[in-house]
Length: 454
Ligand code: FRU
Image (cartoon, rainbow, N blue to C red; front, side, top):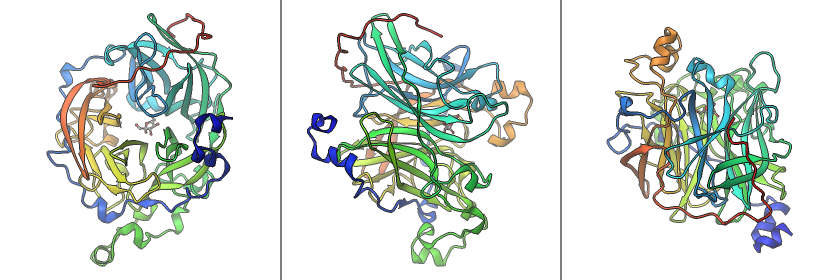
């Protein structure tokens, strides 16, 4: 009935057979990553830190994503509201500790900038995990479909790092006065690493940084099938591994380049899974769409912008997660392919699309490219005067507090021309959408609730 409703033959195939989706991953090679350079096209302007507006006065705000329509466009709810979800923590905790207590809160605004805090997305006792990390959400017929990372276990007494992908579905109430989410159904764990395509925490052997997180819902406009992308690691046993030729580069490159010891431990990938039922609770893990073995450990927050018939795949990554012998800044990296499971090739310089400027190498992080190719992010550490991200953690508390942003960063406008990308403008903090679609009015059965706020 669901498939019939979509009137799309391919859509029905999504549920019945996964044939055709199990290609081998595209590869980000060492040869390609050696091309990474900071250029005038990809270097972000230095942020004017004194001019920043607080996003939420009492909260650190970092990874952020907008409420979307299923097609990926940014939702405008009845009442004219846009909504963002952010990982948040009280400003009283040291910035480095925020990951251990992250809570997803939402904010709404008509102009995409003057955000009104909506409070916690979920009642405190509902979500999986001892804390929640990044995810994605879409709205359909007055319901919200919410994906997030459940990190650790609910109620644990000391912090653990297990990561699972979780899903919850609830109702959206939106009118001239504001937006709230309520009537959440019981949360469901929709994916755990399988140890075959995706490394389990155990297999990682406490390695560099294990990841299975950041679920990003994606309705593929070409197949009509629904997917979730996520940040994973390829299932390998680090100790017994060597870099394969295909991860290094072509023959000429290989013969002239020795891969430094330790590079084989780096195994980040962009994972993908296919929706298998109409409740959004059953998903089938497929092989990764992009792997960075011997290149980078973390391809974080993967997401796709489809334009001009091509799939633009973006990830964020850190300088410290590049394998030995490679050097890339904290930045946004991108790849393009002609189909979802295609042969992704790096955009920009070796994949680099937005780099923090060398003067402020950690000024922002967690860029997310929106359908109009604007990229939002948050202000990370600034004015460190040569300290690395690891060293900043050893400074006196007051120093750390004074050098961390925890607010939305100025949005950057990108253009993409084939493989070339350029930062053409620095915009205001927040979402700055030039064009927008009005979402359909909700069904009349949605009654109004009121308990805005935390
Ligand atoms: C990126 C990230 C995400 C994760 C979150 C945890 O900034 O590492 O991958 O969900 O931060 O705070």
